[in-house]
Figure 1: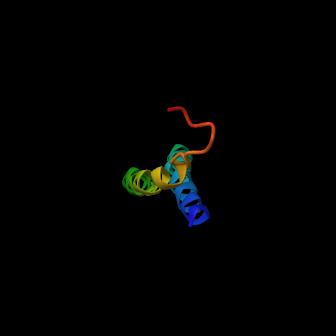
Figure 2 (figure 1 turned 90 degrees about the vertical axis):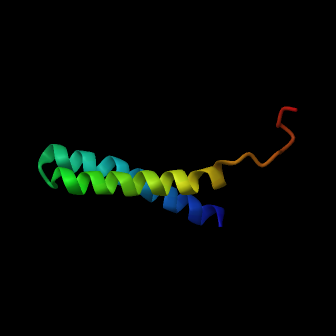
Figure 3 (figure 1 turned 45 degrees about the vertical axis):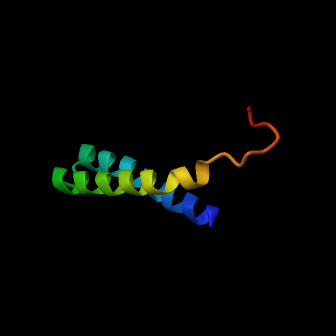
Length: 62
């Protein structure tokens, strides 16, 4: 499950970086860029907290 969440989070990061490059090179328009960025941000913020959570190992501070 953790690996799946990491893959989805990675897709979210790709959706926040690639559209910016495509807009700069004229590959897509601003509206499509905004939609992709919103989707990427939602994917990241909805999935990343679940796999980035500390596991409470021996190194955890009190």
